[in-house]
Amino acid sequence: MEKIDSYPFYVEPFHVDMTGRMFLGILGNHLLNAAGNHSQRRGWGIGALNETRHTWVLSRLSVELEEMPRQYEHGTVETWVESVIKLFTNRNFAIRREDGTPYGYARSIWAMIDLETRKPCDLFSLYDGDILNYIVSEEENVCPIAPHGRFRFRDSRWVRTIETRYSDVDINGHINSIKYIEHILDLFPIECFRDRRLQRFEIAYKAESYFGDTLSFYMQPVDENETDVEVRKNVTAESEGEIVCQARVRFR
Image 1 (cartoon, rainbow, N blue to C red):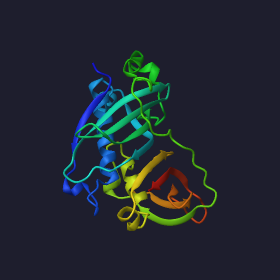
Image 2 (cartoon, helix red, strand yellow):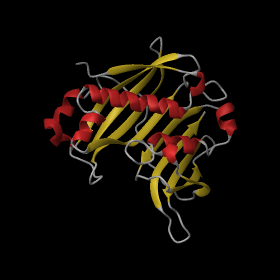
Image 3 (cartoon, rainbow, N blue to C red):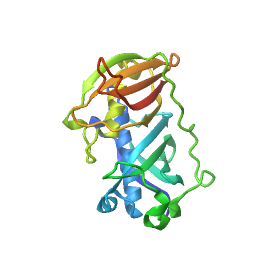
Image 4 (cartoon, helix red, strand yellow):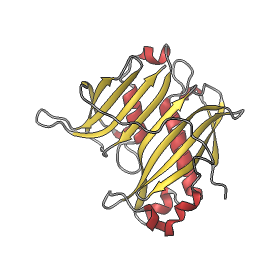
């Protein structure tokens, strides 16, 4: 079996914003679907894992784009596993136009957790380490965007608090990873998307949140084009809450 899979997508009118470009949340779903299908074909899909009370969770995602796909365009998402480090696997993506030229690329880190303990599992011990058979090294297939960065929050300011609702919750019973992306982008004025272009978005997931939790958003400018965002759950007057995720958003 080939180690790299390619999955087509089509940009429907309801997948785009007022500029005619695809919402990042929609593109994110295409990336996650590609990852899921790639794993499923190799016996590592959610259906098979659930039988042994395991599942995949996304730990980090970085997407960098030269251009966002536009309405009515056809494209593909290529995906492959770059490396496996006991508790985590690094998965890359190439987002391509119909002619094969790249819109951009993405990097991700995934952990497999035990559904009972919610703790990460040793990937080398599952299925006799079969996952190692699907690694494509950086030398074999390049993902040319920068690795995931680090976040340091020193002077962030609160900007919004929301309550999580029905449409935020996924099949694993926690808030869907793409929903955080959508909520974070909603913090920015519409001019950022109308007059500029989203160039890079990276997010690190720190903890799970669930239906009914409140999510508080804090922003910290890095420079005129880049902003860090921290999301905390269940902040009160007595508690700073727990960090759920941290993100960096860069416009050009």
